[in-house]
Image (tube, rainbow, N blue to C red; front, side, top):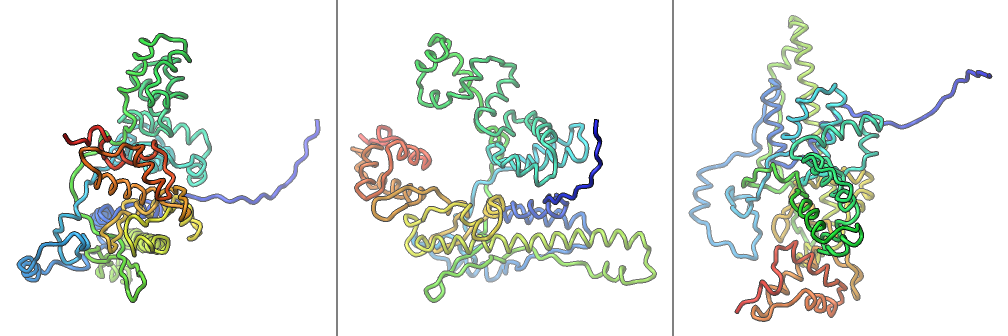
Amino acid sequence: MNFNHTLELTQSQKLVMTTQLKQSLAILNMSKLELEDEIKREAEVNPLIEIEKSSEINWEEYIKHMEKSRRIEKSEVNYNPENEVNLENMVRYSSNIYEHLKFQISLYRLDKKELEVCEYIIDSLDEDGYLRTDEKEIIDVLNIDKDTFYNCLNSVQQLEPTGVGARNLSECLIIQMHSLGIYNEVLEEIVRTDLNLIGSNKYKDISKKYDISLQRCVELISIIKNLDPKPGRTCSVEKSVYIQPDVIVEKIEGEFVVYLNEKDSYQIKINNYYKEILKSSQSDERAKEFIKERLNSATGLMKNIESRKHTVLRIAEQIVKAQESFLRKGIKHIKPLKMKEIAEKLECHESTISRGVNGKYMLTPFGVFELKYFFSSAIETEYSGMASSTSIKKIIEETIKNENKKKPLSDDNISKILKSSGINVARRTVAKYREELGILSSTRRKEY
């Protein structure tokens, strides 16, 4: 047996998840409302921080404005920065599922690293409760091994509502089945491979494939239909909140210019009293250490907020460049756009773009839109190359709006109308877009 001792030098890249980086990612992911809450929370626990609104309401001017107010025409921009109570800027806001899950996970017996991983997984869930983020990305960012990741993911998947933390619909339903004590191999196989057949109501095909009676097939599928495909939404409590755009687009001398909306934003300042304590040679050293720690926390928050502003503005600028046709002509002219395209132009990760558009709004000549609105898939057209799914939805909506209510257009008829305009959209796609728009089928739209 031969033992050789050798010294090898290897080079590798690892991203260490520091507290500063975690806070930076969290702040970038926040909406303007959530960021304000975060600033207020920090001000409550950090005596060095003073906050004030960049502008307060001048009530005399406000009352005068209300007296002179006139009826807003439909063609006017919905958002009016001078009107603090524009009801058209009210949106439905859901309470935070993430806080609900973090509270539960805090009750588990986990070490500091495991808790950090679990909380990161929770923060990565979408609003339906699914983990869409690539597993390798989480493992690399947190610098952990696969076993640690899967153990922590398993802990998250045990939280309520049951099914959160699943990576796809099949896993979500199986987690719920196991939670209910349902362990059936045939049922699990149907969930894993044949959810499309259930969606098409092809019960005979399923019963034939698994060699079960039609009655037994119906019983199994009824179990599936009683499960929740979107568990993350079950603990959301909706309330109406007022939104303000994060960025504003204005047309200046024929060109569109985008800038940050700083109106009513919180300005963070450092209390001068504590600066003087640091300068004083007679001050207690323990007090100085405490102040230095709080000062680092305050400056870190300020840097991360500035970084958020910079990132959101850069993303908005790229959106404006890509969607100039929309800004000039309207919704029907939105072009196909993917977050990956913006990520490549800004030389950053796609997840950064996702965080940068989450809950952020843009004021345009056609009203206030969430930044996510400008990202849509592409549909091939006969004449102009590609069209966005968003613009096609708008065409479908207008086509149905102008139809004969006594003879409403079927999905097939709408598909043919679109094809005559050079837009190749299948009937099934028309039905999908119509349902996403909340429009009933032709038989249910018919007026007698």
